[in-house]
Image (cartoon, rainbow, N blue to C red; front, side):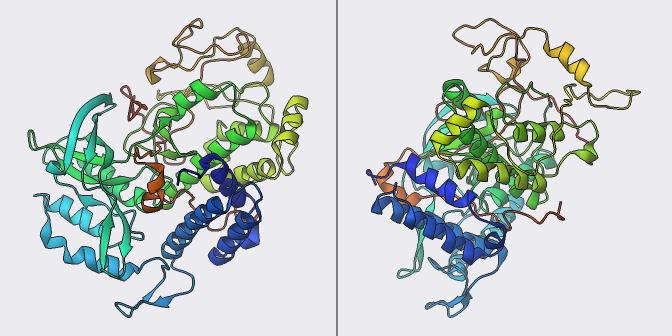
Length: 496
């Protein structure tokens, strides 16, 4: 709908999520009702925007009921089975897909079985991976080399599934829209990592909306190479920071961090790790950052903490950098602590936050303070001394040197100190050091008219069960960088 203000709508959605308390967050239905009431009571939203926001959290509600296998069930009027979803019947959708197995094949039994396995676990009509015939793709154009893969853009003439038509008992497609193609080596000659990356994309991205959606797999008939078909995104985090770093408030920065942490937690829930988290593969879609590129590993640098960083955020960064891996917080602790910081910001007005930033007063309860920083680069050499955190004197000597702080266009350019020009953003010379690869993820953006959002709306909010744990439970479209530049492979210790 053209009258929907997405920035206002998603600000309210973010607030409704941040305000969930511990007891409410343990119950999917209570969480849904709580968020719905926050939306209905919000005076900044129009009636159409409230309708749209409730539609989004209702889809999330259905998704969570199926993921956690809990909540009220109903009897499907078609198949007479008990189902959890309210907007469709999960059994009818899976049966429809199963009956279509004989209508398609990739020509490779491993790929066929992988896609069929994923389809039989589908939990929403909008997230169904499939085999996509190459002749259904038009206007295929090369974009860039993304790490180990060539990246293309194309138009998918059929489009992905958007909803279940209960009257006609069939899935309905969106229609023509743009996609990204990620070329991978021929499966016959590829190693196991190719299949694992494809499996990760198909299973995780079609279960959780916080990871870039992979619509399925296709094959280039000219050389037999298989390609992942993925959604298109607005921009990556690096370019977003280049363009907006001077305007971003800490409220917005914390929300970005929460988006990324939520996505990482979902990846860990699937017994997977990302291994290459950087700002080039954290992508933006309609106000939220998601994660992409699940297949490779890379280097890890520690950035300088910039002046004005809230104390609690700084302390959390330091804990994550501890020389002793056993002292670093796991993803669940990280999410809980960032949830507390996010709650603080979301519960304050922009005006009061501005005053806090001006006065450098960011006191938030229940955070341990630490003034030590570990700034060493991670290497893999034999006979290294026992790792330790740098002392305050060492840090003071290190940071007393002048540094140019800029955000380069090429991820391989991190670590190079240059003067400010059209390609770099010079920030606070004398106080800062080079930015490291901190965040990572891909965001999806369809180019279709926004009035069609009702039919193509992705589940923009990923509800988290048990939002706060108990204390004792301690240019893809605009050429966003898809794993741009060769990444140095780095085996991470199991205990990280």
